[in-house]
Image (cartoon, one colour):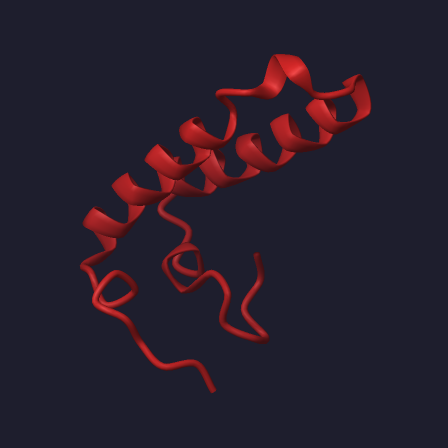
Length: 69
């Protein structure tokens, strides 16, 4: 079992803003990556951003075993 941190205990709207910031920060060096890695990272980013826009309830619980990513 993971120990909650102040960051993981943040309200859902705050956590969703953090996730968007993390996704965008993770794409900053995208141009330097090989094409297959670019496609994979963009696909993951798109899925996370779509979950944020759709208010996916499991999104705030990422990293918890058994919860969809």
